[in-house]
Length: 113
Length: 114
Image 1 (tube, helix red, strand yellow):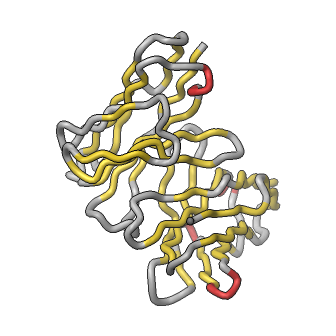
Image 2: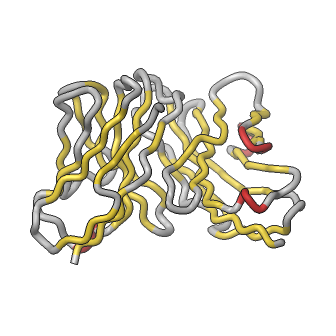
Image 3: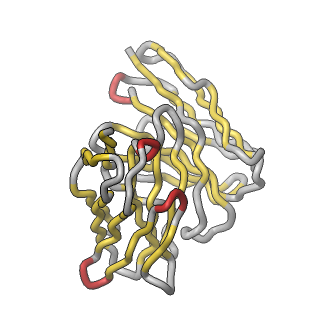
């Protein structure tokens, strides 16, 4: 069965600092991996996704993530945090043939001025 | 504008009073789904639909019903709400049957059951 673990329910960084949000997954077959962002009082929107091919995936707003099969990880990074990045971030996994996304618990990102 | 809409956005009700949360999408998507979001648990799937008249249970279907009579609409029905159904609910849609396509989410419905 698929599962996702996000390490750290809250992450706080200074403006301009590196953002690193951790995600580990469990899947019995090659997974499809996603990062979604939820701004306050809004629905989720897709940041980036990995399906096949290149393991370093670039998304919107300067975010990227690297699929590491050996570590079963899909960590999200951004070199320089901006105040507008403050939000909740969800990692999710799906599998070929499955008809659902399995979400992690979410990580709330706070940016300090 | 391509979007998923939900109504109402906020709802306070009492135990046992039937309610319906509507969901509509204008992207001609085949797949639609309902999730609930609870603190520390992320989003969990309640029901999904692959197309008109085709629905199936997700991970937490107890206490909920759905129907898919038209492609654009996917209402969530709580026939006898209970306080443990107090949550934030999201409807989502995506094109096709492939799970790697992006899901588009509605703005959410915050439900409180007293």
